[in-house]
Length: 353
Image (cartoon, rainbow, N blue to C red; front, side, top):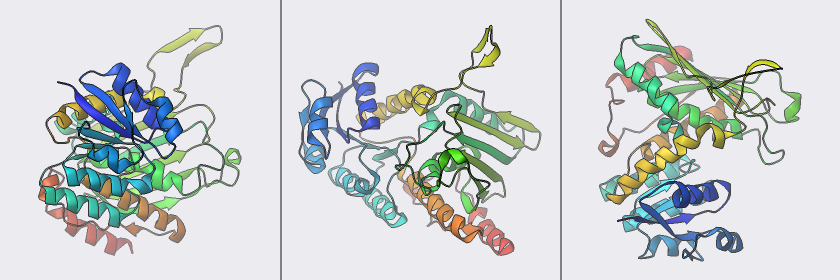
């Protein structure tokens, strides 16, 4: 049996997921689409798919068994709550929502429902390189992780569409989530520093350096450079007690020609993470077919939202801004839940202030 899916939002990422679901993966049918631009939705809808006037109509349609949300962030809360109300599994592209209060409402609704239904689109967790890195850390042979160096570089971003807030409330969420996942830890506080600005970004605040203070005491430094010209470059290295482990540079092929020896750099996020996007949907399709969700959860989306909020405060204050999380509901229980997290967080913030 194939899973019948409806897609809300048919912009660039929505269209890429429709391509993925119809041309790459098996066990799934796109039977419905919706977008505020009805003409665009009709243009990209697969043959036989119904174009719905509203997201609510799509979600409640009897033909739709699961939902993929690719609409703009402020619309996510209403659409997620609607999916939970009717008990349909939903894949939600990041951000989960745009405020911590909205994340709490979605989390409360899912907890009340009593079963996970939401998977958030943090695709790095499904990347083979990151999974090998995590397996090495989980093995324990290198000892406790002490520092994680994370680099996120774009060749360029659209002028006028990508604002100075977006490195912190849009781009950073991937680095925050992968740090939490790799280190089995929570972010207790955030600092932001702005070095000399790149002339390529004009008035854009770029680059930025973010320091995540983890509850265990580990530190994560994140470089976000979004106008670096040469390509899309994602790097990561964890320094542990007895060694280090790092991501390989991608693509792995080495070019030798008349110009010398060099390694190509991906053009954009689609080239670098195409296999991760495919894998996250493979796993989502299996879980959704069983009426549930796996992978990054509503709790993870909530945590990323809090980190982004703290980063926005930190860039203005120049200070270490605390991340205050509610107690993790049992629905999202994991080995991240260690008794010392809250105590350490309070002590660290007190000593840093």
